[in-house]
Length: 53
Image 1: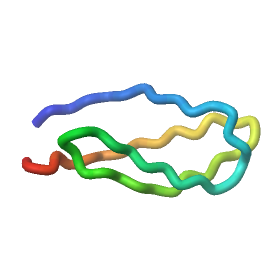
Image 2: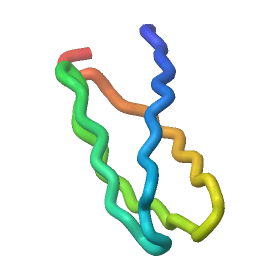
Image 3: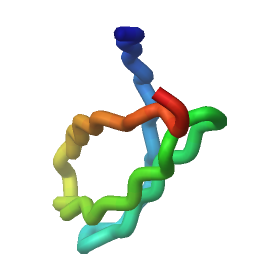
């Protein structure tokens, strides 16, 4: 099984609930909700499946 780690950062978001969609060719899209808090770093972990495993 291939494993990977991506350090992706999104900056300058205002606090609140945000919808996040991860997209990469060959993998199923993943949409989730993230609660962004003012002055804090939010860490999100995701597991994505290949389209044709």
